[in-house]
Image (tube, rainbow, N blue to C red; front, side):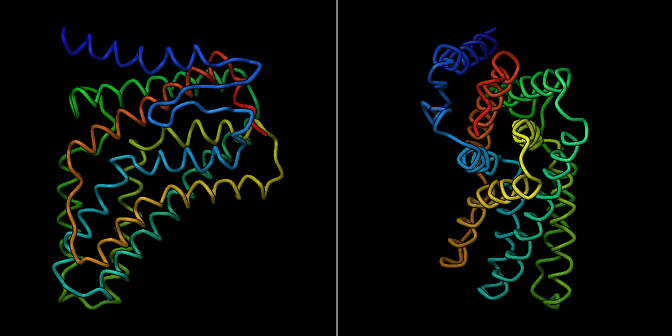
Length: 275
């Protein structure tokens, strides 16, 4: 019962400020951590940057890189870390770009339909609630995380592709395939932001190239945290695994933001017309 009370309190703290501040005149909402956001001044570019950064700090997207870099550091070779780690990040970015492009094209194909907006809103709300639940009971019950058995298999594969005895060309091909596979596995626990972001994007009826410009901006900022960690590891030749506290906090923040956006899309969709 105590946990349930905490969950209800967290949900209220996340939702009520947004609903209270969301006004048709100035369209201001309150986001967790970020604070007040004036949607009239936000625009699609800033939205792409903001949501991309928040999506990038998802624990699902972070753990694999941390594990890979931990194994690579044992080689003591900055060149090997740069090439193998860089390949992993680059391929991960390409795969995720294709994934959100697929979401975009689905919405462009079906066009604007009230039922689609409602379904995406409900999905975002459920997704956000599950993420918030994970802050209190991580991995218990319904959770958008990679199963432990799958993670163990991925870690074993990482150990083989980062073996210093493996020839560099073979290692690069292997880590590229691994990055693609990991990102496909991770889609379940990272689909909330891309779904709601691309739904908002397609409502603006932009030229085709403009859609992909914003997707590219989204991906660049989605990868910012990975690139920061990667740079630190190359400079210091030291790496640490993603701590549990970070995983839980990232779930709370991302879940809260997705929940708020889902509620706004459901109840006040015009607030999300930013262009």
